[in-house]
Length: 455
Ligand SMILES: NC(=O)c1ccc[n+]([C@@H]2O[C@H](COP(=O)([O-])OP(=O)(O)OC[C@H]3O[C@@H](n4cnc5c(N)ncnc54)[C@H](O)[C@@H]3O)[C@@H](O)[C@H]2O)c1
Image (tube, rainbow, N blue to C red):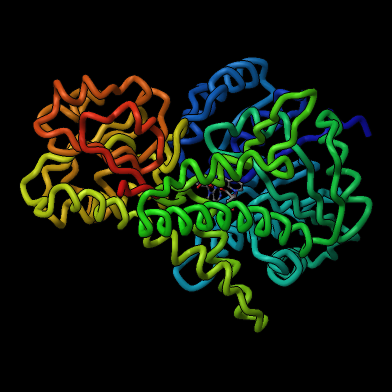
């Protein structure tokens, strides 16, 4: 089979599904993206990205323009004649365990299609699911609904995605590994064939190991962040130790930061070994929580992971503590928040540390004004965040404020200077929730950052 003649369907057109579909279309495949949200489908077909991701607009213009990509709400029509069908819907944590309702709903449509098709398509679970989900939930559902046998009449693979929001197009197009968990070699080979362009190592394994690789990877990154935050909080308690200097010192360990051709490589992993106000986003909190919950079902202990979550949940509260050190009574005080997205280069606010902080400062009756280059009034839909005001730029947010809090490392905020704050603010207090600024450049104002308390 000539690989590019394979017809690919991706169900769920969010960060993972749309980027997967659009990038595979750019590689020459015929792709249909399915989403149940008509607004998402309409935007994709107009080559307008429904989400903010660097480079996605250009990929959509190209692939919608040349007809390789289209979107639809009609899953039945999309699946007809397709060779490979990805499941890329959300898998949230419901507070108790991973919520598989979106996956199960898609399996319902897939089962019906499988019962009718004469071909042998491959179903690919790209959504993150806890180990054994594909074997114990997805395959039994598909077999039951189709009356056919996985590995014989249709293939099933697990193919976790490792892209980072904010770099999704680049990450998908330049992956570091492709993980395929499969029930049969033929399906693995078929899926492998669509990634020939990647030129990276393939890890071909069983489904549950593939699922575990995804959760282990995210758990490791989350652990590095909570580890850095714990040491940051310890440095603060001791006083006179700046966690930034500590982590800079750790970063020079050549086992973490190899020297190649006489130069430091400064790998991206080092950005997870920095103290801040905690991790958020649609993956780390829910994946670590889901893995902890899953571990309980098999009687395994997850002490490290439970503490990773506990440290992370406490971390936004550290910002309020720093603020209250300078302004004990926050009631009625204008406070500026710089950044609402869970990290820079995305408009995603899911589990953003800015949410608990906003709730807490509004409960304290602050006059809270935010500026985020990509997040505006939609933030106010989040329960407890209704009272947040928005400024048009960071200068508008800080004008007349008694404190400014940096929560997201947007490059735009590099232009904030001490002179600006002195000129614009009522009483300049800068709380650096990400250790984004050089504290030595803010010596004339009251500065406090996570992981540092001057003696
Ligand atoms: N966002 C990331 O950075 C990232 C990275 C790696 C893996 N993942 C995993 O990928 C999966 C998807 O994450 P996401 O961030 O892209 O989710 P998302 O919430 O951005 O998108 C999911 C989309 O699926 C659609 N959908 C839900 N049910 C549907 C159905 N029955 N039919 C058609 N469409 C349906 C929704 O309308 C939505 O547009 C999750 O399991 C997540 O953990 C996410």
